[in-house]
Image 1 (tube, rainbow, N blue to C red):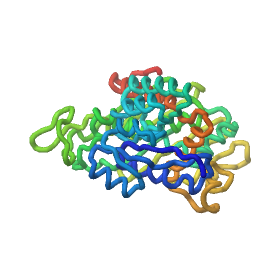
Image 2: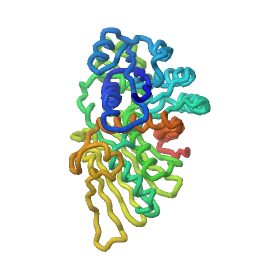
Image 3: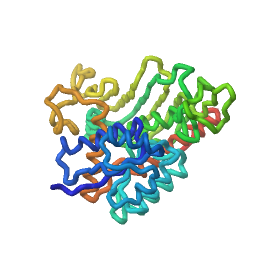
Image 4: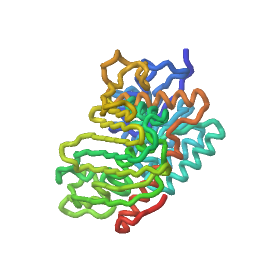
Length: 386
């Protein structure tokens, strides 16, 4: 019998569902020195939390996350709540000696992210581990892209183009959910999906952004209130509509510390695009391109090969990252597998007593980019160093 690590998860909506699937399945495919025990789920509504726990496989329920953190059967806290709660929960859990996995973006502000990173550093000295959940790092094709860059196959990196295109709020009658409220989400497309492309670009290239120039826009300024919504920041009207207080789209250019130039686009108004996280990297010796809507493929050009052009790599071979645990070559993976890989890596680090990646410091670096983008956009796209 492998030692068990009791997991307590806070939140049970979209992110909670995919995280739950990962905790349920990880040891069925990966040989780990420890096994997760899905000990307790926390949600504010007891009835809804109990229904979610029964459906998703959690053994117990708490309606106060503080009680979850205090439980002896919880050694690891998984935070799947809106960004305005991340700092309080994570810091309390780390101070209580619990390992912490926190959804992205790390926080809603740089100050919160700094406090979380400081708490994580202090906890690490006591053997308590923490990780921010940038799951797209765990797409096998993205991990392979990182390997190719690290091996020098692209040479000197010169251009990075990153996009995250969605269309789920194109309808002006789509309700004013929490992701469209700054006091809950921190920012809109910028923090929700822009954070992913910032992290993915920095991860694949191994370089950090040093400055940005940005534009943001909110195309639909008011929306119907979501069911049960009240007391919204920014005001609500008697006709049941409220103000959208975040960006709908963000565009920015940037410079990396290795000299590369970058362009970034995050929007939830790319009509017809559902989840198109795209990355292209051009170097002196080659290029690579990735699109999550074809997530099992990586396109690679090797400039040293005569008449090479871009070739399609089907990232399903046993030697490709993470693929040794899954299906025969040619049998592709899906979105949910990225979270299984995520908890696999976190559990392995916890068991080995090593610092997992991406760390809270990595999350803080992304948060500083997001803040610089907002500052630049608020000041007529002025160049804003990091």
